[in-house]
Image (cartoon, rainbow, N blue to C red; front, side):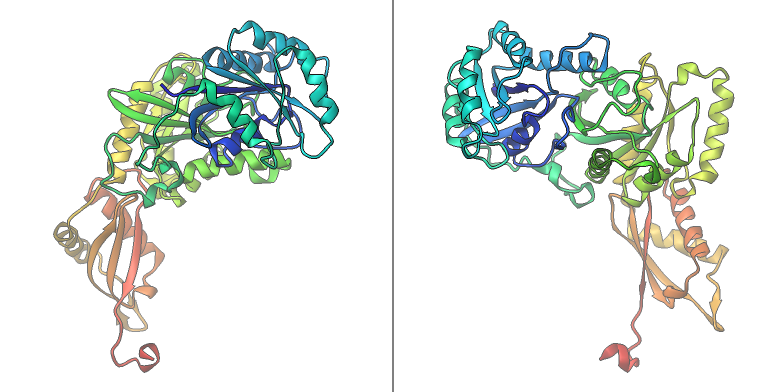
Length: 462
């Protein structure tokens, strides 16, 4: 079993900076202000020859259990319980504070091995704080700088007795860093399906993920905008592996002023780009706000399979009437993903989760669908006969044939003459007929025009 190392400490001691250094990627949001991290985040870490799982946690604070800070502390205590080793971090430049002693006692009571890490100890600034750290009774402090990497050898030496050596895997496990549309279409079927959940603040994304996986893994509450980092969670549905990404709520761009919120939104956008299926979660009591439409459009432009989840469905009175009305609305408000699956659900009550996952896997299948060139051209012949392309400057646009260039999303290449003059309305006509003719509901469809080259055109030849 891979050892688990939890990073614990007050707010703003550098836990997320160290987490990013250990996993070798900027996964956790880092800012000068304290309390940026709220959820616990896990990652695969490498330190010298050691391989282990590291958990970044929220800063420990004394607070009421029902408050946001209290719920954050509960997440941190869960991380301590899961860990094989606890790295208790202090700010060496600031020295010990009244908060450090009770939290050191909390870690000591856990009975887990503890490494005391005096962070921000670069240069001579942290010498006094390192000496003060002995009073915590957690052993010799390890001077370290997460920002600059100083003291890495000492941290390696401190962790080594608690982490068994594991051989490096030959397989490249960094598939998360490959955009979904660049992935191999015939890749390993055991690889988890990447599903990102997006929506406006307070749409219930974290509550839904917690209900799906059956544990209070993510921080939730009545406050809007609790989630800041994009958190990934591994899960299995009916024997199929799934990697769920919970994201920060995305407001209208004009309302985003703070740097931290901009970082959170950028993290959410990255999660969309690396997803295969995106669930756009709407609040069923106020559905299809302008921002909801913007998020669906954004997902379509990124070329991801789309599913719309209508959360808080348990609060709706006329369920059948509203569902029929919303499906009708979606057809004209979201013409670019006509036929997109719309699933009513309740994250709080746990209703509709099976329907949601069925829609997710169906959308993924459509997103990967391939159509033979022979079928496409038989279809094209009928479509052109029913509605030929218009003439331009007295010359009719000639469409010769079409083929599917790739899937993920379905992408078609259209060949002919003067295709650059093909009106958008006619392109839309072809896309809509492709969607209906080959059963491609809700998925983005790309249609690229490939014009034939005139052999007598000297300028283009030269």
